[in-house]
Length: 326
Image 1: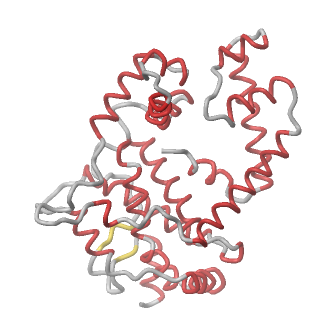
Image 2 (image 1 turned 90 degrees about the horizontal axis):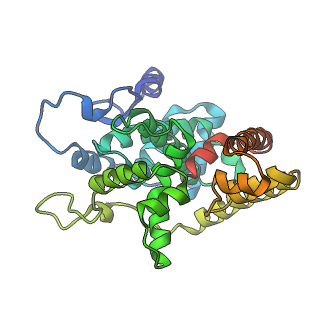
Image 3 (image 1 turned 120 degrees about the vertical axis):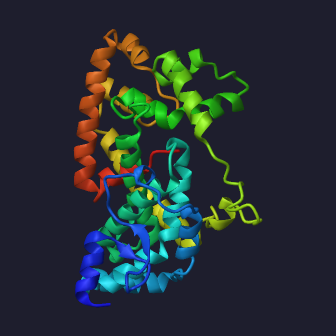
């Protein structure tokens, strides 16, 4: 692969072989794949899976060596190998988010691949984290942004309440049902601080979109979508990196918490850190202030926290965006 060819690939997308004869979808585009003209009748997702299986996975040592070569020498061939070895990771993450995207799964894969390319550019191999762990943050961030920008039927992300509902409705329903409590729209609207009508509409849409990972990849195959994906059990290296990253964030949050008093301390504890947050009204009643005043204090607190973490932790914006639970 020539230097000019590699530079073109970095700018416009990675081809599936060095001659560029078969595109693997790793490219930036403002037009979702599902909205592009379809001239041939075939299953692009199945073809894509067959294509990316050609690329070998990397050992930890190989991964580190390639990352160092890319960082120190701008070796774009090393970057290419890092990307192609992690295309299956993008598929796994994209499928985790598919219930939030009612159209072509390849749309999410395409955006995740762009995030993967950014991860290669930003990754520091000397910090001790495995590349795939670091890359997952970027992949999720790009997929989330794409969904927020393109989900036209319901405008998600315009307010904090809508964003919370989009990602937390299913989780909250499961939590209540596990406790033997009926997850009624009225109760969910109270717990998530949104209108009951929004709960009903969102629940209907999410239920109508979801696909089964147990469905076969094709009619005459016993292979399922799930069987193609890597195991959910993290390798030891990834588990260590995961614990280290969470420990760093936990320590920084603890130090930040020590600086807070009064209303800010309560909002931080009972709104930002808990899985069962108090509503704005509940906190307002506690301090004798309005919901809007609580919202203002919370907004100011988030800005203060963001500034603190940006100073303390590199790429904290990406980390926070990507750690949204689905």
